[in-house]
Image (cartoon, rainbow, N blue to C red):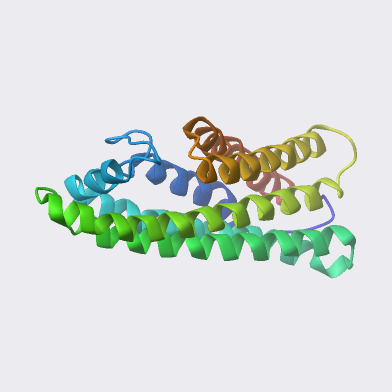
Amino acid sequence: MKAISLNKLEAWALIVGPVMALAFFLLEPGAMLIDSAESSDKAGKVTAFASNAGLAHFAGLMIPLGLLVTVYGMAGVWRAIAGDGSTAAAVTRFGVMSVILGGFGWIVADGVNHIIAGVDAGSEQAIQAAISVYEAGAGITLISSMAVSLGLLTYSLGLSTRDPMGFHKAFALVITGVSVISVTALVIGLSATNEDLVTLGRMCYFPWVIWSASVGARFLKEDG
């Protein structure tokens, strides 16, 4: 990738955006750290949001911001390599478009969470009524997660073809494999209500973030 240049702001976006989105996802009520509830426990998820409304609203604003910053960085990489007309550029473009589509779905799902966070946590009737809203958001999240996983799969695969054999190529190929695992685990886990597979799919977020940060740091170093 030494022959291509990337705006420093776009390179920093690849580092800051994913970290921000992941950090606030972890802090989101009902997720992994705050009042954690299994994906099949719909009432538990709704109660977690309603009981921590302030945090839910804040996380629901910061996660989309992190996603937008991430997509900005990814689009910058595609822009930098688009001029060579290579297969890698075409595959990377598909990856960016798929992540944009999935990211938009995640943002819509976060909007649904704002509605859930506004219900009365002390009212059983309100909690039950909000479950149908949660189910709609969960469906959007499922499809969006598949799109993001597919996008990261093709994006990392496209970038891997530009490098000679070495650390960066190997890391990109590992992320391609991680993306395959993620989309498979999420589809099966959410369809068959298998919490272990859902957790496995979510754990793939961590290597994604590490890889994205390494790509951004690489561009900053090589541009310098």
